[in-house]
Structure formats: structure tokens, C-alpha cells
Image (cartoon, rainbow, N blue to C red; front, side):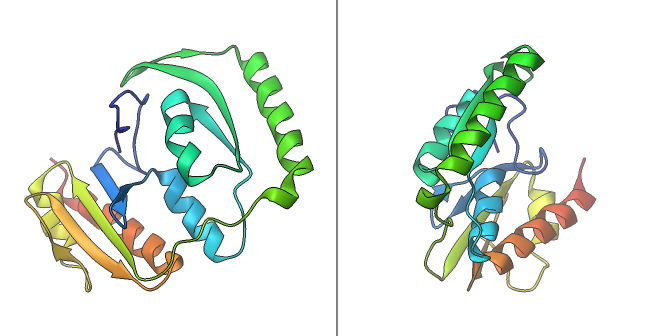
Length: 169
């Protein structure tokens, strides 16, 4: 999924097929979808590393998590990246802080039902994904799905994205 400000480097949600994913009307990245899955298992996310757009987007979703910016987006396919040794240093320090502050972490959870909305790059992808039981079309390139829990939402999302790949141009 492209970042809300359209500046994430190689911004995606599992694949380039998804142009927008939302849960309960809020845009989500793959980090949020993964975080919700982990949260349903009682596992908190303590550290996320990526570009500046990802760190900004996760501030609302995972305020307790350490967010390490190792690159700044210049365009969709270009980034101003830190030297790997500097990135490792920052990630290691953040990991130590995350472990030290683990008592303030909490699982990422949302109350059920969970509304999943996925917009694809083309209508054919939405056509194919909408054949999965429980999904319905909600726009020219969009589908919706209602889940009772985050594990079901995660599985439904991955199934839709993977099946939509059979309609790639």
C-alpha cells in the first residue's frame, strides 16, 4: 500500500497489487495487519524498522513500539539509506530499549467485528478476490470482508491478495 503521503519507498502491503488496505476504515500497512494477528495471540510488537513513512504511520497504531528509521523515502523506488553498520547500531539499541521497556508493551487489538477493505491495482484482481466466500465487491477495484477476529482477518486478507495475483496483467 502506498503511504498516505505517497512517499514510502517501495511501499506495499505484501505485494504491489494492493493500492489501499483498511481495517475499520483506517489505512493499514502490512506491519499493522501482522501486528493485529500477533495481538490476537497476545503478542505485542516491540520494534519496527523501515523508512520514515512507515515509522510515521505506525506512531498511532503502535505508540509503545520502538520505530527505527533506516532510510528516508526519496521516491517510490529510491531511498536515502543509512550505512548498514549505522542501521545495525540503531536497530540494536532500539531492540535493547524494547526489551527493557517490555512491561509497557501491549498487544495490538481492535474490537470485533473487523471490517477489511482492500483496493487493488485493477478491477480483474478485485473480480477474482471477490469469488472467495465472505468477500463482496465494494467498488470498481475494491472488496470488503467482515471478520470476527484478527486471525481470520489476516487469513482472509492473504487469501484475497494471493488469489488476486492470478489476474495480474
